[in-house]
Length: 81
View 1 (cartoon, rainbow, N blue to C red):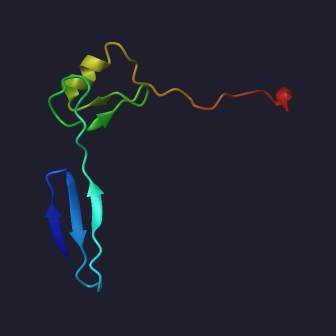
View 2 (cartoon, rainbow, N blue to C red):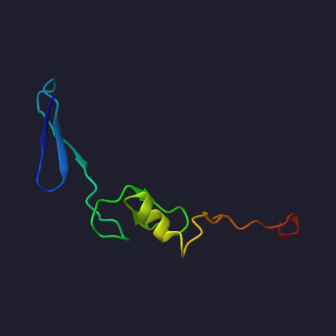
View 3 (cartoon, rainbow, N blue to C red):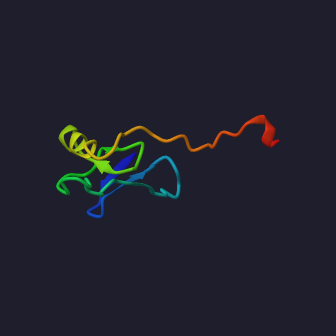
């Protein structure tokens, strides 16, 4: 197995056991933190999907956001059926 890292932020893995050696491309995250815009994000807020890179950025974001995910399913009573 051969691994190549490209400048475009992808990893290419070649499998030498196959005759064709078809590459498997794994995209790398290159999106920056939406709070500091300095580092690649590691975390995503479950409530609003803001991407952050560190605990200080998460804490800064939580000043304006509860961080609690909303229930995507609206619950209805049995009388609606």
